[in-house]
Image 1 (cartoon, rainbow, N blue to C red):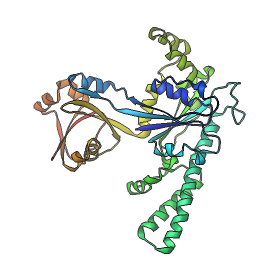
Image 2: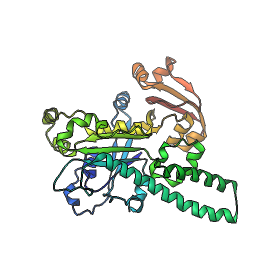
Image 3: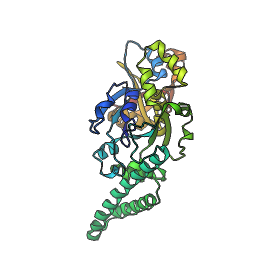
Image 4: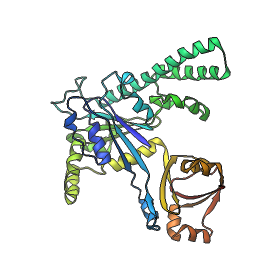
Length: 357
């Protein structure tokens, strides 16, 4: 899975990228407003996975991973015309970095620091971008239907008109209840306001206490939306210290959990994904799938041949596996369940897929 970090200029996007990935990119090198796109693939820490692998240390260990893309600043009102539009559309989730700090040397384009205003402004821009895409497609579709009416074309027209009406009311597509068929139908549009979004508010030192209660800065109960706060400058300074000094300074500043682990947990919630594990002949591996994924589709995430030849899934919860010491020992004690293709994979399942070759 992947997240695109984006936002208005001078909000701390690259600072957050460094905190999440362990990179050490010099943010001062981008003061002229020009910057390249930064990318990193990072393993997802998982204590459960480490304990499972401890039973099979002779095998390779392959953790789940998350890709981060750090995009340049987007001027106010320019999302729909941005050179980064395709990067946003190709992301599984969006990370909107929001300015919450005061810095006299970096004036805010609107003349004031107001995270809530910037968040609402960005959400409006995502909606406008989708509205532009829908209007363009409806214009082409209208001409196509004049030449030749088809049931598929009429269905597309009806759905897009419903989405357009919703967007015109200022509501994002992620707030609309869509059937699986409708979601599949519009998947190729990669609508921005449909994507899960995590607003990351970069606060100043005086607002560090608000990191543990970001709702006091901005609260959202919208679907697939979350809000976190961090202090990029202070956390960057702490991470540059020797290990024994880090805890002292974290305590001094009143910082709790660091940004990276907090982000990872929240990102899984926002994307509505879970992790299951497999133990193969040569490797122990963690896999990421959407919640409520049936065993058949989970098998397909490993290899299409496993999905095509699916026979059954042999399943045990990770904590039970640890109790028995190995998958084989658990099978001998009849602790491994046999599940069919419709079984909904649970977070923490250890699965062996039987399939016809």
